[in-house]
Picture 1 (cartoon, helix red, strand yellow):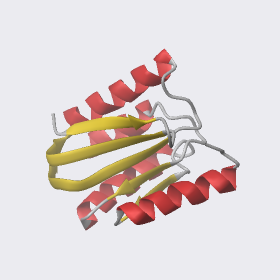
Picture 2 (cartoon, rainbow, N blue to C red; picture 1 turned 180 degrees about the vertical axis):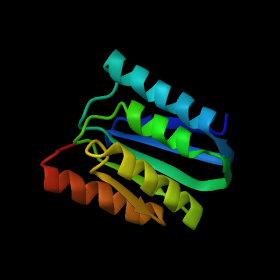
Picture 3 (cartoon, rainbow, N blue to C red; picture 1 turned 60 degrees about the vertical axis):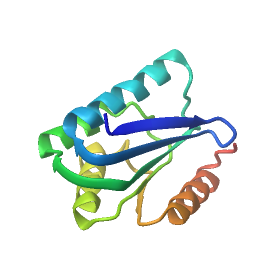
Picture 4 (cartoon, rainbow, N blue to C red; picture 1 turned 60 degrees about the horizontal axis):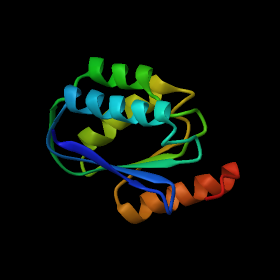
Length: 133
């Protein structure tokens, strides 16, 4: 599966990453794993998520229906902060579609082109929302 994650308790951040050819099935399976972590109490609303798609070289297997399923099944609480690193306009468009379909639960999802910008977005949004880590 070309999607995985690492829990970083010291920063209360989930670092998710994808690589290679990403598909709807990969993304839905990843979402199910996040949902299970919330249900188990391993994740809380003050955790942030950083999606890193910089190693994804193909998104032909990601469909509008798949993005809609992700937006509708989003396990992250409304005020959780998330940032996504994209490298192509196509990736940007898919994440933007996710944002639009997931409102209001995707209000705090930033789209960036670098890890430094993603980290800065997460830090800025946490301060703005009064989320201390």
